[in-house]
Image 1 (cartoon, rainbow, N blue to C red):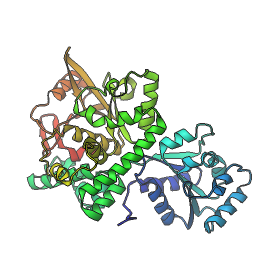
Image 2: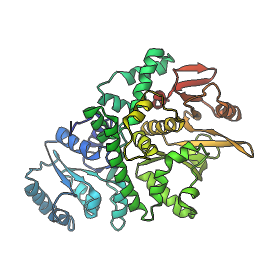
Image 3: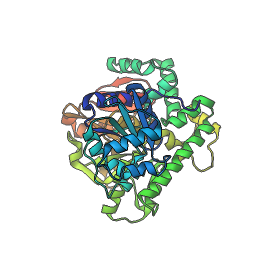
Length: 445
């Protein structure tokens, strides 16, 4: 059903902004394309205000952007907007949504004056890549509250499936250290694999709910990937950003200790590469895990900028990217993935979903490698900082009986460890100090 509205946790953040800021800042909703920014902005306006105006700068005539060229007379601007959209604005009870604001940089520059006037509230949305590129020559307002919206997390996906029970029960089981039992675990693992395949982009979730056809879902995801590709060329017309993105599955499949950029884009000066990576990370299309040389509380302090790993921001898009050797990925491949019967090594998919879940839960991504000898490195996939200690995480899709990297890491840094975790595809259990948790519990760590 086109236009289906999904329950999103981001709505609560918007409520907090409206309550706490009371019009003293505009809300800028950051995030990748198609995560639902425009939809939630309008839903919020309908529910929380007596009236609203939605200015979509990709659809209005030239006279509307021209209004913001001169903000010395705000009465003139507000009157013109009300006539154009046939909406009455009510002081302190109305909001103006400036959608796709990257198409009108002057409107963003005007936020300082608009917020200072304090008559109405303001919500801005747009593609972050385009915002950066098109606002280089304007004054960026400080009167903004900037919040990042991510693809639907696992709980939001379950809500979309009509299930509001599973994740709270998982939280209770994790807190108590209780395994789910074979039947319940198998069901939740299958639900997680469905989330991994469909992903958290509302367009793809809508397609799945409408059709139950995973090939059609795949086609929806390819449309989104095409938009991302277009955006990457806005970052870098040479195509380096697009190439780095497309190579993510292959890079993770190699299981190397870092993303190897040279085979993908050739030799690039460090300064240029770091700028490119920063813009890709800011676009929220990717999640980047940064290598720390000295894993301890204050992880960013020893961030090694030259070593990093890159993940696709949405694992559903990652799966489509990984199987993009044909125009459409057949339903049979999706069904085998869903039933966990595809012969391919899927460890890299579980690593990507872990990165997505940890990011959605508010964690920055860090990892660590250390040598065994000159030819081999041990790797800790993710490290979290918790209560003056660190929690190392190893992700496995198979072979969970051995976890040498984690064992050696815990021995080497024993005074720094709070709780070591092995995330895998089996049920919750303890192995000495090690907590072995199913991947679907990653957001609870």
